[in-house]
Length: 546
Image (cartoon, rainbow, N blue to C red; front, side, top):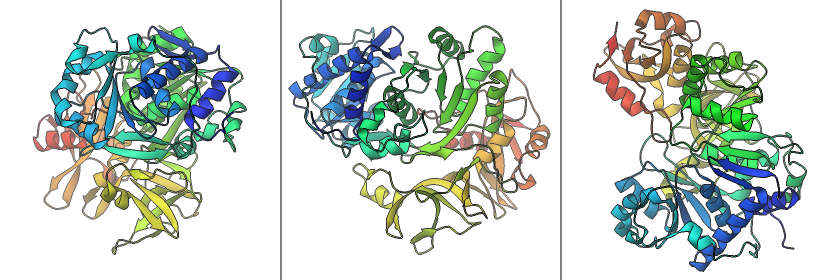
């Protein structure tokens, strides 16, 4: 028996051997037990090896949500190759960039994406192996030299027979952020296991001390949970690993977009206990469908709705509490670079300065100040700086030493990751109030205003469906707070009514001075807010409201 490490494949195989007949993964018509899933991942791993894929090679996963996506991930981990998430909305230059920047040598792809691959294939000469997943389309495999997954798996053994692995094996997550080309975050598997997957303690509150502890942390009575974001999104990818490493039943949304009625139908059918969303972009349509279909589904099995990876406003959290009075609503802070940075308990807020929530300071979680000379130090109580973490962090960005040097900085002999979120170390020196992205901060007459906290306040207005807040020019103050909103069922709230609601939650200088109403709020392919679109919409004076 080989030595076990904090490697995801090592720990997953221990779970498989302990509960082989439990249901593991469901996505539409795809259903597997742990044993069946493991055998298919073994076959795919052997197929990759037969195609010359070796430890350290990068393999693209270019699919909509499907069981084969996670089979591909696990197959890579088994042979110490590195899976790379590819945003299925990318075309042309964006797709070419990620294929080449990530140094991919193989790609497991949905058949429907063959035309996109063919268009840019010449720009990625090292990418020679293509494995096609049947998605009901009939694109020509031969046009890019691809092979059919199911046909090829039939010729591969189901047994493991793989070498020893390491907790240092990489898990690379490409993140789009809000601007520019995507960046590949290089996570050693041991670090991402502890930073983003609670170290196996997501359900027990007791992280593993050694790899074999994963068996003691496994759920004795398996729970069912659904990851609603695409697997190409880090929050969903990690949640999938959390569920599979706990012996639980993981359900994926098989549909290409999030439709509330479809989701609640799946939750009822599978009697799911846990729902994972990514902020208000998912909360809003789910809540709307509940209101429009009151009493339609039996959702009594649900006891946790959790969000991570995007702002989950207090107004939407409260709506979920009203719809699910016996349910835990959790809001985790985090990013592709940081993993989970703590959960907001709601027990302590900085009433004077607002903020998105409050987390505990620790030796691995702090606020870091960047001095004018470019050096860094720990914040003193009352100071605002970068929400930061040390300890279990990534190695940096793949193929980007410049961004790595700006984001991963030395402070007092340790490397700290600067998340880009602004935060304040409170007077007690023990708690941190998180505000939001510093890059989006609005400077109005010398006052700093974070769009996310204004957006939270506006979402408490009964007629606001969704909103973004941006800076627009102001003759006296330099910049002013401007809101772009979409409304519920054609409502046309006035600027004054929005200001009145906002003043209940935030200081007067933060309330919007201008209002624009849009049919729909622009969001990026990864679901994050598109502030560039919102600013252009506001500057165009379109939809302006008195």
